[in-house]
Amino acid sequence: MKTLVEKKAADSLKGRSIIEPDDFSLKELEAVFTLAERIVKDPSRYTGVCKGKILATLFFEPSTRTRLSFEAAMQRLGGSTLGFAEPNASSTTKGESLADTIRTVSCYTDVIAMRNPKEGAALLASRHSEVPVINAGDGGHHHPTQTLTDLLTIRSAKGKTEGLTVGLCGDLKFGRTVHSLIKALSRYPGNKFVLISPPELKIPDYIISRVLKPAGVPFTATDRLEDAISSLDILYMTRVQKERFFNEEDYLRLKDSYILDKAKMKLARDDLGVLHPLPRVNEISAEIDSDPRALYFTQVKFGMYVRMALIALLTGGDIPEVNA
Ligand code: NCD
Image (tube, rainbow, N blue to C red; front, side, top):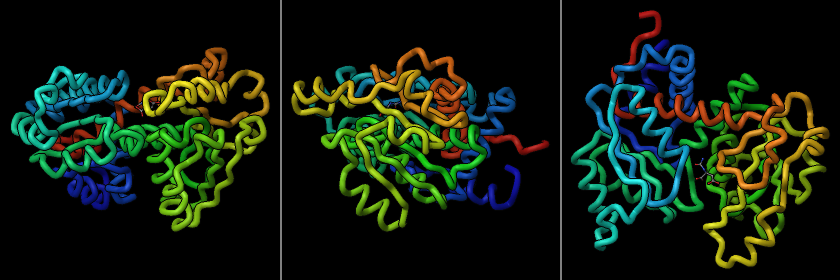
């Protein structure tokens, strides 16, 4: 790593788990991003960093990007992967507890990425694991590696993660990516949020009382994207989280609350960055995919690179020195 500060932050990450984005100090986050940015510039230098190491991907909930980007990341670092993509393929169906599954998998592997529908499952897993656990999404709670992806994308587009007006639009109630991103961006000075959702999908009260208010972060709430869009540096669109609704009627009524299309993009600034954790359903019209302000597929790429950096640091990988 480059500086003594970075080296210290990187050393302190070895063996650690990440359950929420603020499990890492800002210096430690900086070490992750700095390494990710180096990997983006010259990925071929990092192909042996995790040689001989194994990543487990334990996905008790569906995923495309998160699981495959973790696997691609480990393979690109020269390591290998094992795991399952749905709970029916594991001994969970026989009644095995999560604690026992994790204790077992941590005997075979060097790091575990887990997604589980229950809030708090990742924290519990980390308490029973011999190796670092990376929370790849726990119910409607947190998704820290998506946040690392989002922050890296914002850094690359804006050159900073502070002093930004960030609009979050869609399902702010159940969207774990939103909860994690608000928590993370609230730690950088000068950020403001515009919370755009129908009243039924507004941000949980605990995010306001335990995150935004204590940090003194300004925010406004509205249900109209067209009124808010012109003030934004970043627009973070999200899918209405069908799987977390209690009844289908409510989902059907709310699912198309927002559709970002060319007409709405006309109201936005030229330097807006549109992010979405994906998968999208209807909330971003494909007609804006070619708009230079649409960053969601760039974001997908960054997701793999930032996971390469994270895995390398948590497993104490053999990271080449800068200019070595
Ligand atoms: C998100 C998730 O799983 O929370 N997807 C992802 O990891 N990229 C967002 C979503 O499913 O809507």
